[in-house]
Length: 423
Image (cartoon, rainbow, N blue to C red):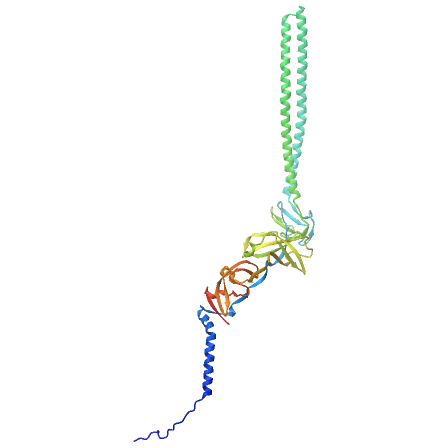
């Protein structure tokens, strides 16, 4: 038989270790308690649709306090009155000033040499003088014709009186038998002729007088019309001397010295430094709340001035709307064109308003919901927002003071109802 090791085995009696059992028991109780304590969080974690790192998100707390709606932006000083002067006629231009020169209203800034226009003025002036002579000659001729007509009328009257006396004399002589009846009849015919001649002379005097008046009036109207043409040409010749319409400063010269330009060509611009305004660019979303006459503040160079919105452009360019503010009072003297200033326009101011910091969640959700953060879980919560400013938005429903919400980065949530926030 082959011998085994059974003879070498020895039964060892093991005593119970109560200390180790207590340690294992305590550890087990601790693990069970930890599981019980973490059970709600673990349940919420498993109920979330996904997990997003907190470093990718921005958070804000709902607060209650004053709410100020304003528009703050950078503006630049522009001239409210900056006329550009044009050539009234074609010709060679002689500049009298340089860019940056200070000028007064009515000062000659440039002259245009236009021989054609000056020659035309001389021609039309000569025509006007000739028409004046015709007008005066028509008056003289009219006086002569009136005199002749009046003479014919007066002679007809005398002839009528003579015929009347002759008829009376022949009738007396015929009554005494001194003359035959034929002489009386001849005297009557002479009287009739004289009467007819007088009527015609009277009629000719009236009709020819009206005709002469019409002729004189026609000559006068032609002369007046020519005088208007001459006056217009004189105005055009006067415009060859380009004068400043305002007190200010020469801005930009668009032509070179002695350059020949066409009619209506740009010559130069003048800036009225006494009527400066500040132009600012306003986001389109705030432009609808902006109105002409709103009060604002303009600050720069260590000073602050009151301003009033004076103009709002109806055009939207790159999501911006241009607006202008004029100074409420005297325009500051130390400003210069294109200088940068800070502009603030107050739209609304209220107290005790529930607000939260403005973020992309307003644009992404249209202000209809927000993700409320509690115990590391962001829950999609319906809300209703009100007015908004540059940095805050008014909360009307859905949130209360002290609530913490995600204001930026919610695009990674993909519209999930619950999202876990990983630290």
